Amino acid sequence: MYITTTIPYVNARPHLGHALELVQADVLARHRRRRGEPVRFQTGTDDNSLKNVLAAEAAGVPVRELVDRNAAAFEGLRGPLALSFDSFIRTSTHPGHRDGVERIWRETAHDLYQRHYEGLYCVGCEQFYPDGPCPDGHEAPLQRVSEQNWFFRLSRYQDELLALISSGRLRIEPAARRNEVLAFVAAGLDDISVSRSAARARGWGIPVPGDPAQVVYVWWDALANYITALDGGGTRPDGGGTTLDGGDYERWWVREPRKVHLVGKGVIRFHAVYWPAMLLSAGRPLPTAIFVHDYLTADGRKISKSSGNAADPAALVAAYGTDAVRWWLLREVPRVGDADFTEARLVARADEDLANGLGNLVSRVATMVVRFLDGHVPDEGEPLARVDGAVDEALADFDFRRAALAVWTLVEEANKYVELTRPWQQSGRERETSLGTLVRTCRELAVQLEPFLPGAAARVAAAVGADRLTRPDPLFPRHARPAG
Ligand SMILES: [Zn+2]
Image (cartoon, rainbow, N blue to C red; front, top):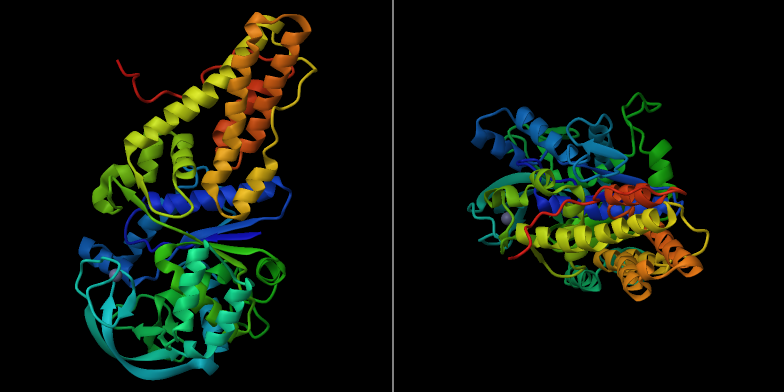
């Protein structure tokens, strides 16, 4: 499976919304790898956005400096969030990216034409609107732009897109999002502007091949990352810098049967309409699935720089640990609908589930094996439940919360079993069977938890994995003081 996240523009540091998409993609990648499937997990940053230029101007630093600093903060989430991405592309520095964008531009030349354009432009969205204000809530007034642009004949692909999406060859989840896209396409597609004046972009971005007064529209540029990232920028027979026709591109975009884009609801049109049309025009294969997640709010408000540390994933990890942050994102965010983040909710979830639920279970089980059986794990006993099927099904639906809950049933079953059997009141064979069952359930938990909480899973495995157990250290810190 080829799994991608969107590549955020880097006008600011990452926030918790970025962490959500990265962690969801990471769970899919780890889950599929664990099933023995070849996986490539791709992420990165959109360095060429006009927003980056404006943010640098506002901060009074060179664009390159601002972009490098913020892109490093995104790439730096790898450790704190325990991300297992295989490749991180930066569109301004990846060796093959610019060549790849130019190549796709030439391949779609039969659908490109020049036209004078006037419209209202939202820099926040990097797109034109017929009138203001910005429907996405960006506060800066829309700019009236009047220039000669390159246009892409999107209108030509209406029927093909409808057929692709309604047949499920391009799967869009959840269903409400698929219907939204189908309605948008069925209402009729206008051609789209795919270049900007180089002057307005302050020279930042990729020049249009053969027309250096224009730069390639940043969305066109950014969407191409899903394939240019697969190309290391080798040398073509004609001396050019990129191939897009062999190696990893061939492996992961042409031959791979499952290519999944994870995207936020605000960019669905770009991924489900513009990008497939670009690929159709270029004669290249399409993605096979797009999963659209909703948004996070923090303390009831849209996440923004003013949300402060509450929305800074690295700061949250520093305060509460990787497991607590990942667990909140996976356990609390629904497949459909926005979710509101507060630190209090994160703490409550971490204490209740991780410290009290999972941590207590593992430490009780290991402690009883040490006390009653001198640490020796009995031969008897099987895990109390198998959750593979339920996890597979939930993740096939991109339902991360349902998948996390399926794993959690093991914790609940095991805790119930402890209360039911009371191994401390048992003896002999009976007690050995109970404790053997509990140890094997905890081992199964370690296996099943790995895609969700890789750090916690490793600690559980260390606590119950050996033939002879020792008294364990606490697995999780407790963050809140008990009431009273
Ligand atoms: Zn906007």
